[in-house]
Amino acid sequence: MEVLIDLAKLDHNVAVIQEICRHAGVQAVWVTKGCHSHPAVVDLLASRGAAVLGEVYADNLRRIRDGFAGELLMIQPPSGHQLDAALACADTLLVSSVDNAAALARAARRAGRRPRLILMVDVGNLREGVLPDAVAGVVTRILALPGVALVGLGTSVGCYGGYLAGARDLQRLVQVAATVTAATAHRFRTLSAGSGTMLLELAAAGCMPPEINQLRIGAAFLVGDQPPTGKALPALYQDAFLLRGEILELARKPSLPQAPTGTDAFGRTVTFVDLGERKRALLDFGMTDVDVYALTPRSAGVRILGATSNYTICDVTESPERLRVGSRLVFRMAYSAMARAMASVHTQKTILPAAS
Image 1: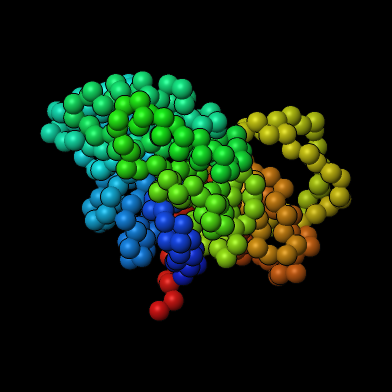
Image 2 (image 1 turned 90 degrees about the horizontal axis):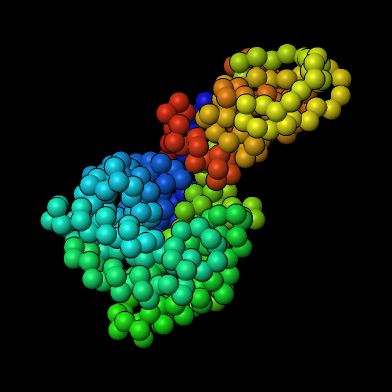
């Protein structure tokens, strides 16, 4: 099994989004956690003049730092065992509580560093962040901490629970910032919003509140769609990352199992329909390698039946191709599939070079 990374399509997606952000007057933070900050992707972003990259894992930040001269943003509060490594690599970190900020301040003083912080505000997605009414008090306490500099407020919308973000969410963040500045006299140089994938359409339509000056963008440039809706984003490629698997077994078998069934090892209930004898292909990847149910076959007549931890079973009865053991099938990956495949040490990553 291998992931095919099409740098030409990825480069196109980056260029389109850069133009949208330029017109909207916002800075793009390119969130590379979904592709495990693959060096080829980081290099492409650097060649395109990316100013800020975002990550959640300290080891990935360390690897990026070795070859990227721009700003690194850690887009979640580091856990205790990540504190020192995060401070050694990240220029700016997101925090969601006084406790996060205080832990970073203590570690920063030990390390002789003064990192920048962005405080997350929960405007309705109910993921991380301080509720709006409590932000002024939290800001006051963080400003009193030696060793850190509070430079901005941020929010995350659209990442949890299929939340459908809109201009109303960003306006809430703008209002919170204005209220806090009035109460504390502290001005924020950055108002950061994510998921930028959901918000790109606002930016493209000129509906972004002017006070929002940073978008954190991941899925949009990697897979070209919106995870909450599955909607393809105009002018972007959805197939910059593909999965290619090899057929290990090809045989005609009944379509119904020979005993009653329950749930599989991943908690799924598979529905079996009696279609008679069908030609089935057993592929060399499974749920530990990729989110199989977030794959779309590229070939006509191929249908995913299900998966185990290390196998995927496809019905290929209607395929016009002359398939055999050793033949390979290609699948488009939605974000969850791409993220898991890129993180797997068992998937080969093959770079398709950008056009010269």
